[in-house]
Each structure stands twice: as structure tokens, then as C-alpha cells.
Amino acid sequence: MCFSRPEYLPFLWLVIPSLLFALYGARRKLRIRQRIAGGTADPSIVPEFRFFRLFTRRAMYCAAIALFFFAMAGPELCSGERPERRRGADVVFMLDVSTSMFARDVAPDRLSRAKAEILQISRGFGEGRRALLLFAATPVVQCPLTTDQELFETLLDVSSPDQVEAQGSVYRRAFDAARNLFDEARRQNGGETVLVLAGDGEDHGNDLRAALSGLKSRGIRVYAIGVGSGAAVPIPLPATASRPETMKVDASGDVVMTSFRPGFFAELVNASGGRYYHSRPDVPVGSQVAAAIAREAAASRWVMVPGNRRPIHQPIIAAALLALFAGITTSDVSRRNRRGMRG
Image (cartoon, rainbow, N blue to C red):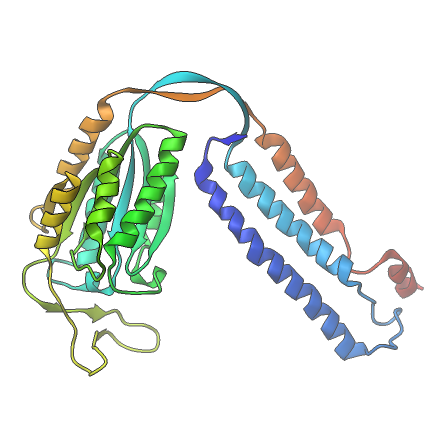
């Protein structure tokens, strides 16, 4: 089996919390019934519930959700292989979302500047897939490789430090995660692979050279975009419902300062064989990077694809509707108890 839109498969993970919520709901309803009626209540007054019926009905809704997401991924029965000429590239955008990216040494702030550059590149490089990898101390795949530009832009827009629990930029872990994305992309397409990094160059990790050599050995082209100025500036923390905007401080109460590190990017491009661009509000670089990627992606290549593909999403949608209908029509009360209540 193969999928025409595999980027929707991660949504299947939502089924797990849905099942847990269904289990919690069934147990809660039983406890409420026990608290109200006790163990000797007349079923004709207070209906008697069975845990199996309570859970099964809710599980039907979960099954319908899972089947709908599975159908959205475009499942197909695939067999054989044939060569196909393709253009385009798989581009992974690596965005630093550590709190230092809130610094305002570039307008409106480093994070917004980096997002604007990524958006321009994504719209400008032409055919291909794009993915979004957020990182601070740990990386998070915000958007898997997809051809859905609207989905990519939506997930880019909502990207923030809140989505990465551990702060402090560690580029090595992010490069390792990007390499894993590229390995999966090559198993699927076998085409050109490009990494676009946007950040301020503050790295709290080590062993960066080993991670970069791994990218270079795989033929992954690296474009680095630095955002920030040379001066040390404080890090503003946005206002929340419980507090106004404040400056980030350390354990001693001193204001934390952040500095743009162009030297980091020089080391990066030397080790990876990539190119570096310094983004400023008056000199955006997105169009230059997009043009460079487009030139690489313009070269056609031969890849092996399934020889025969038969879509099977329609019967899966039918099964999802059937599960939804079963959940709607199934009662939490057994037929015998319903007759007793009517009597």
C-alpha cells in the first residue's frame, strides 16, 4: 500500500487521546449513575448502563475519525515499478524558535523576520515538497513534507517558542532530525534535497561538525539565513493573560542579553558546503534563496514510482460513515432496560 498524501498520516495519532477520552467518559458515566442511584435502583426509573455499551459507542466515533484521516492520506494499492521523470526538490525549512528569536534588533523581531523569509522562499522555488522543522533545545516536526502550500503556510504562521518545551538552541539535534526527514524523502522520491536554516546563530550544543558532515555526505544542499544585528539586546517575553510583557532574566534576576552570531553561520557553510545569507528588513534574501533552489530543482531526474496505483479511499470513507452511523444509533441503554423504562 502507498499514499498520495502521506502528510496526513500523523493525524492518526489523534485517535489515541480520543480513545482515552472515550474510556474516561464511559467510566465517568457509570460512576455518576452509581452516585445518583446506588446499587439497588429500579432500572425503570434510572437506566442501567453497561461499560461495554458505553465504551463501544464512543469507540465507534473514534473509529470514524481514524478512517476519515486514513482516507485523507490517499491510500492506494500499489504494485510494480516504473521510471518517471520528475522536477522539483524536497525542501526542509529549519526554524529556530528559541526565546532569543523574540529579540527586536531587527524589525519587527527575529522570529517574524525569519518567518517572512521562509514564506517568500516557499512560494518562490516552484515545484516540490516542503517541510517545517522547529527547534530550540529539541526539534519538533511542525509540518511533514507536503505539496500543500496552504497547510504549510498555516503551520508556519502559528510557529512559536511555546511549541518547544526545552529552550536554548541546540543545532546538532535539529540537523539530526532534518537528516531523518531527508532519508525518508529519498526512500519515497529519490530527488533533490535542500535544507534552509533560519536563526540567530546562538548554539548551546556541541559536535556540530559531525552532524553537518552527515548532511554533506548525503548530498543535501544547505542554505543558512541569519537574522539579527551585531549588538547585544534583551529578550522580551510576550504578554500573557496573567502578566504583562517582561524581559527575560536569569536565576540571579539579571536581564538576559542575546547577540547575533554570524561566525556560527560561517562555520556552518564551510563544513556543509552551503551558502549563507544575512537577512535585514531593508535587504530581504528570500527571493535570492528561492531562485537558487529553483535552479537546482529545474534539473529533471528519473525516479522509480509504483507501476500501478488503485485508489481505495472511497470504501474507507464508506466504512467511516458506517461507523459514525453506528455510533449515533447505538444507545447506552440495553433494549431490555428500555422496555422496562417504557413499562
